Amino acid sequence: MSEVVCIDLPETPCILAVSGLLREAVARAAEWAVEPFNDAQSRLAGVLLDEIRTLPRVVLGLPMPQDARLRKIAQALSDHPDDPRGLQAWAAWAGLAPRTLTRRFVVETGFSFTEWRQRVRLLRALEMLAADMSVTRVALELGYENVSAFIALFRRTFGVTPGRYFANYR
Image (cartoon, rainbow, N blue to C red; front, side):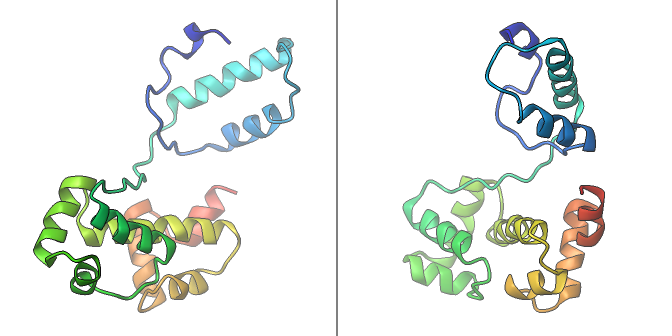
């Protein structure tokens, strides 16, 4: 493919809401040998590009802070999103004042500490749910007090319950 056909694709990496059509087209294209495209492959590649151009972006990235102390916290939470420690404990663990942690986290990630923590849990939840873990097990393993709290946050973020989300994308 030439650069011309890619000119109106997203310029930076992003997350797209994947349609069933895109999922199936990518699965088919993944089977192709590395050779010049035949006519059918060229048409399917065009469909892939059209889908990528028109699908909505999903705001689900997880920026990591640059400050070494904040990155230490972020990495620990990424590794163990179920860690129950609160902001005060995390600040003490990293050698920061709680107020500094609160202020710097927003500056460096665009999210409050609580929002960032919820996001890391939701990203892990997506992985776990995609691996066919039950909603109850996911909620409890990620440290939610109860399943209802997890479902409510999931619905606020994605617009549907975890069960419906995966029913729509399978």
